[in-house]
Length: 107
Figure 1 (cartoon, rainbow, N blue to C red):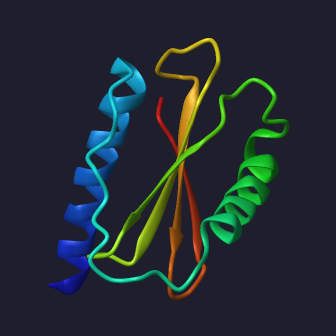
Figure 2 (spheres, rainbow, N blue to C red):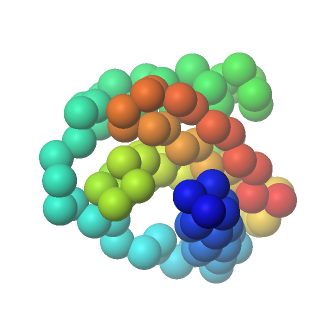
């Protein structure tokens, strides 16, 4: 049951992120109820490493936006391509407790 709820949450967050990439809208504001274990700079470094492993150079992407979701203990790092478009963005999720990094393409 816990896995189903986590999957449903990931689908909801992904849908919001996809709409953000497609429409240029800001993602739902992150919650900041509890402090994170990782710093923003650590999360950015983890996200950049994963991004470069998957897409190579990041020169065609704008600086990422970063949000911390205290309810799921996850960071969301969003990259949008400079040329825009649904196929030109991706998200990286970083678990604040385990440092697990997950890449998700928008298109």
